[in-house]
Length: 209
Image (cartoon, rainbow, N blue to C red; front, side, top):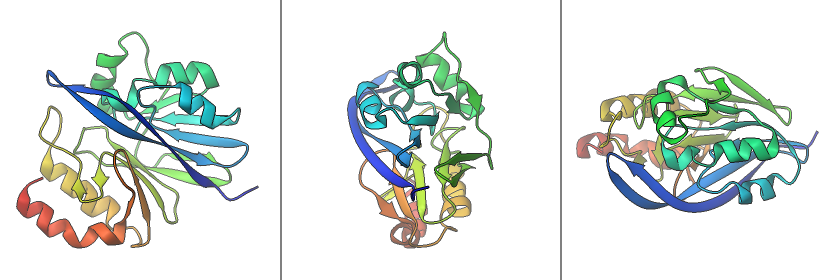
């Protein structure tokens, strides 16, 4: 068994919510080895993800939350690679806007474990950006944070189903307690670390976003 590795793709497309459309770049992460992987978010276009999977077994397609830019390629990817789509049920109302005729294959809950490449990826329920937002932690120094934590602060909370005090609680209680050298692979933008972000929590609270 080889050591799990992180692979990174970027896709571009439209994020739509509350009547607005925004052009965005999304990070897509693969975590695994030469035989099997977990895909973290299926954004915009499934073809480059299929190419990156390169025939490996996909344990799950994990949607860190239900916003369209993180789930819009999930069904096509699932069909192409024969993998289940996993989503926290608290974001089902967001999923259903994008895919009203297809349900996710499994529900994620806090503490769930996805076993891949000999490593346990644990689900951390981190609501705030959306009610069903989740992160994935490998028990060591790898975190996939979705849109909960970015380089420079929390995910946005100015739209429907989001809440700033809730995301602050999630970040403080679930993420900033991880080791400082934990590498944070985000849903958009650059990678960061817990140690880089933790000192700024008070400033984020003061600014309110």
